[in-house]
Image 1: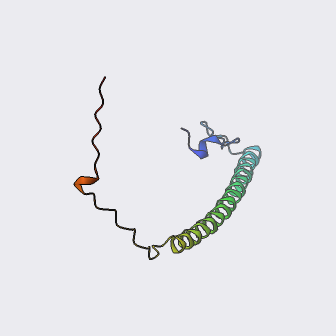
Image 2: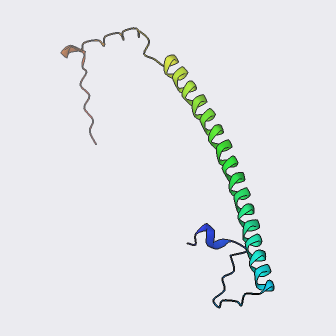
Length: 105
């Protein structure tokens, strides 16, 4: 994966050979510096826009979490254990209540 800085459309120009000290060389250096400054300003603007989008999304997520926490608390209060009527006791089975059935094949 490439770093975001290496994905720039206009990477800075690097010269391997030193130029002679002329007026044209000075203007070329000025041009390079201005170009790099423009590129960095665009990159900074893009980063600020992305930061703004991230901050907005975080605010939305905070409100959604808060809403869901409130609804969970309300549901917990609604579903909290209420005093339940005791269930009737099952009848005790006595031995004479059984009937014997014989099945033959």
